Image 1: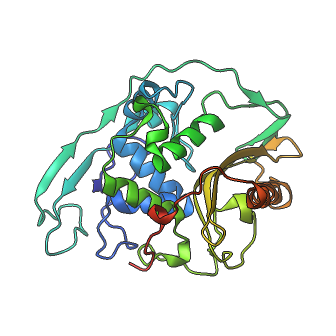
Image 2: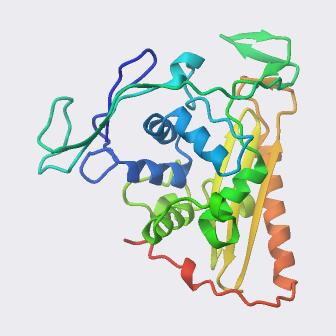
Length: 314
């Protein structure tokens, strides 16, 4: 998947050194998104799908409050975020597509630059008592009205639909094949250190990376028998995790989703959030309290966890 830059604020991608052969792919972006909550991977998928498609599809599925309206970790205008890059897909040639004009592979799909005409509901969402703008403190509430939005209930339902599609209504099921579901579940539950491509070093990543519920800020080896299928988020002091937690050793399972806002000084954009001292300890304790309860709860139905076992070495 070759991403071109054709509008203000856009950047191109011709090569991805974290893949086995240097070629950027949708599959690889999804892996990075699930393994370490990679912002650039999100941006490339946002650009490929386009703002209108993402929001209209989720609204049709019943998630009416969702607003996905901007890329992550880069400051762009509303107009720039409405423009989606041109993308081209090539069948894999014998040599890598490492140069912009390398057409040794067959072009199989091309989507031109797009501009979103999406009309989304106006919001008046202001929080805190101040924020930093271009290095200067502004003593007034921070406006979240143009920021991405998804309720905790929606995120919980989406994770549930990926793990148990038959448990949600038909309109809330994604059009995925059996292999698609297995792929998503595998990389939702794989740890960064189990991944070969992309490779993550153990200095900056660890077994429990982005497994906030149950582990919090721990950097120890995962507990024997525990496997967590989840999706997290953290921004502006909000810490979010929606997880399906399995304990193969004790044959228990549960779904748990939580969000906490940990920004005690109520100042935004100062990079001073209480993730390590408040947010992650809360998530860890919450997950472990629920796990301890599940260990003692009498079950009418004994779960069969075999369908959620994967070979993480391949």
